[in-house]
Image (cartoon, rainbow over all chains, first blue to last red; front, side):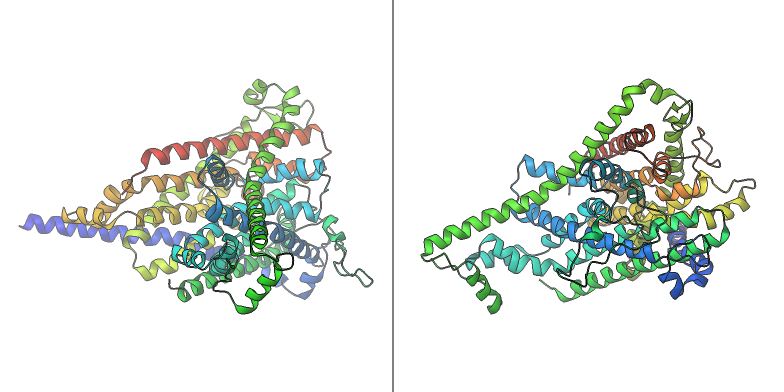
Amino acid sequence: MSDFKHIIAKRKRQDFLFNIVGILCTLVGILTLGALLADLLIDGLVRINWTFLTSFPSRFAERAGILSSWVGTLLIMIVTAATAVPLGVAAGIYLEEYARRNWVTNLIEINIANLAGVPSIIYGLMALSLLVYQFRLGQSVLTGGLTLAFLILPIVIVATREALRTIPQGIREAAYALGSTKWQVVRHHLLPYSLGGTMTGIIIALSRAIGETAPLITIGALTFIAFLPPPPIKGQAPFVSFEWLTSPFSVLPIQMFNWVSRPDQDFVVNAAGAGLVLIFVTLLLNAIAIAIRYRVRKRIKW
Amino acid sequence: MEEIPSLQHPVAAAADLAQHSPPAETPSARRRLSRLKERFIEALLFLAAFSSVAITLGIVGTLVYESSTFFAHVSIREFLTAPLWTPLFSPPRFGIMPLVMGTLVTTAVALAVALPIGTVVAIYLSEFAPVRVREVIKPALELLSAVPTVVYGYFALQFMSPLLQKVFPGLPTFNMLSAGVVMGIMIIPYVSSLSEDAMRAVPMSLREGAYAMGANRIITAIRVVYPAALSGIVASYILAISRAIGETMIVAIAAGMQPNLTLDPREPAATITAFIVQVSLGDLPHGSIGYQSIFAAGVTLFIMTLIFNILGYILRKRFREVY
């Protein structure tokens, strides 16, 4: 009998010990995140002010700013979103609602799974050869935006499919029973109902694209640029201009990379400042995505 | 038969009717038009889905095309066996092994951090943690993989290196160890989240069986749940390996840029990805040997990740359990 108690006590102790180990391992991740934020704040907070946001890069660390790089990031994101969102959502709808089970569908599905595992720098190499030189798009905002759009396309497709999959079959059947065509079902029911899930995926994908550095370096984004692309809105008719698409660019992570690889400690402070802006934007986007997911989950009860 | 605008907002329904009414005088003409429209939309959607295949073809095509000019004047034998990688010096040497070793060493360090910690976290979250703790911890950990990698590079160079220098005196500022450790922490959520999903999908009855036999939680987790979820867990490990091999900015910033044929993670060394970044930063005339060499490096990287992805596919099939 005492043997038995002994065994039980031992097993409970094992469980307790693992509980501690589990909490410690979890803390490794959480504490690193905390240390990273603290490190950036301590190093870079002094640099965060209006001049930093509205100045061009400079040879002098105190005068250097991130104006051209955040404008570049913004423009690239516009191109990326305008390409990846319609393409990815359409592909997701096709695969989930239209595709017949045949080898073409299988090929597309295996292909998307594999694309998600391709290193981002490989997309950069592809864009360098194909977009920059074959299609002669140059080392422009358009090339950069398309490159990142290709990169996040699998994420958008998967998110769209998952969002569509949560809609009960009964909704589709009800709409068909009332005489809707397939596209009407998609357009008036499935798209609106899956909007929350799709939006979450799109925002997460864009936050990933904002932080991407390697593919843009590969296609030849500039590390030092002291002018802005031409504005999209003009004073005279036709009032809009797409010249900015062909402009050379830099983006925030490349600016940060450029500063962090300099030996001068003053520029490292700039790097931390740029890092703070970058991490603020990505964490903000992730928070928005989590908030949308939470609200959707709460609101919709099938 | 009239088409019934079902369950729509009245305004949207009216707009929809107005849209395809003008040429449609008879119901049958209208139906034909509507069928045409449906066909057209389906074709468009198919093209969108097929664009992903076009991207893959683009990747494989450009890699093969651009590196074929490289391999026209560098033999594959030299590429795989020469101990030096100095494509931009004279005389140039084209041995990819130093870069491959750099990639493998940083990957090994990252996995030594991410696999044990990620697995323990997954077991903890799936089998031990209260639901409310899990609901908070899981998204918090996932933020780790949302941080831009260039920020991790900064962290590895400015925080992890000085920290590790206290443990290993004489550690150079640029070294594979700190880059690898930070990379490992970055990929913890890939392992923990996916493994946890896999473990939670294991049916409760298996656990209850183990408990009924007198097993405690940890024994149940290790002997019953982990093997039952192995297919999903292996998938998460493979994803982590792919991420580590392809990771660029952390190693480009913190591991150094010199190709270095070594197994010692305390030394600086360039990885395949770091080399591509380094060359791309310079002026890169189209068709020059520097331009070709990054595609040769890219092919190597692509094949390495492909091997792991195929391996993962095989292992996943092998360990699949169906309940």
